[in-house]
Image (cartoon, rainbow, N blue to C red):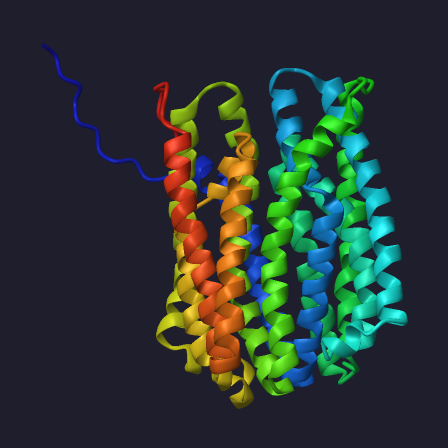
Length: 439
């Protein structure tokens, strides 16, 4: 019997250091830092009330745009990745163009229904919101859905770094613009801030959409595709994303109706701080999702779980420092970064950071279930989390205010994370051994 000599562990080579995954996380990390800086600048330059009004408007735009995209952003990524893996370029091109047309029409319809509610209805008054900011939400409804189609289409087409760049671009530009406005002392209202951010998404849409269009032209003439099949597949995904964004919007809306403007603004800033963790999770899921779809289409279940584990470790390494600070020293973080009036949200920040830790710990589980056609299962888990959040929020917020809202938020996240992981392990059992992934 012969033995291979033991070789010393090699240092990471330049290829490893320049891994697309690390580059994607690097782009995401700089965007997270920029978002954090922008929140600090807005807090210092506009105060808690302005930050609160802006956050509510941004959350409203996100919720309605999530509905308008109909889940087709994830469907286009899954289908394009699978089609190109099998050499079906014509089908991939047809799906991109067909889904983009549908999303555009639905976005126009949602905007047409929303606008009268702000102009002539009681929406802004009921939420104690800035009407200018709520009007600017229309920009997000029209732009954000197509923006998501473009970014996820690029990922499906094998261009994850380009997609990550265009997703980060609005945040980078927004931080730069807010910095200039703070120095010029020209921040006037939440409406101004909201319009700037959503308008910058239009810039990113134009860039990302043009790049996807140029890439799709190389796939051949579009084939004939039955779009209703993909609409039916997208609806559960839309429901999942919509219910998750609705949960966050509901908490903000409930607090807006019952707390002081300072408390509302402070809580929303705490919420914004934790978007750094959600951004890390979203980046990981978006980057690895096309690879998971390809692995599943090829029957490589073991490799799919290997990708999940590696992505989870990387997510934890990136998100853990901020989450630990938020849990251990929340008051120091809020006061030092944003000012004394934000200390009221210190305890809620610590509670919500615990929930986000479980969220990151589960890894790209949502992407795995979506990319393997288990969106129905994920929808049931999401509905369970929303039901728990509704019960706890209506019971705890009147009694405990911001702390009650934070408990409801974290409990729903922990439930979704734990149940989702258990269900995924039962559904996606390793069937075929494949060679381990190479670094």
